Amino acid sequence: MKKMFFITLAILFLCPAMVNAGELENIKIAVAANGKSAQASVSNMAAKCPYYLIFNNKGELIEVVDNPYRNASGGAGPLAANFLAQRGITTVIAGNFGSKMVNTLENKSITHFEFKGIAENAVKKVL
Image 1 (tube, rainbow, N blue to C red):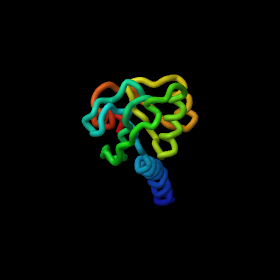
Image 2 (image 1 turned 120 degrees about the vertical axis):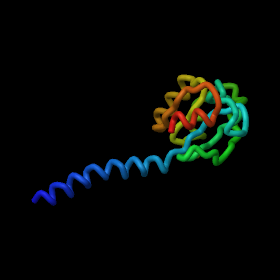
Image 3 (image 1 turned 180 degrees about the vertical axis):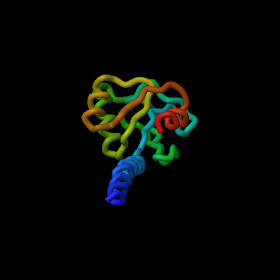
């Protein structure tokens, strides 16, 4: 009986760890950036930044994407948020976010963080 109790406890403690590990594998972080390298500065404008740097769950830069909405005359926030959601982004980092972009990110279950500094450092802090 005691053995069964301890096995049950072990399973209960291991399952959340496995779920968290699975969630970590699916993380894709987009950093609004002013340049195309991990050492680029984080852009103050989430929706109208020149580039999005895409990092994996290990903090490695895996892709650089030109922001197609950087010159939009209106509605850049929701458009950019939808664009990132379609790319499977789970977290967005920028210097500042507009309220419409925040609303769209939240509706898509994408977390967002404000950060000033270097893109690579922002990703390390989030991870």
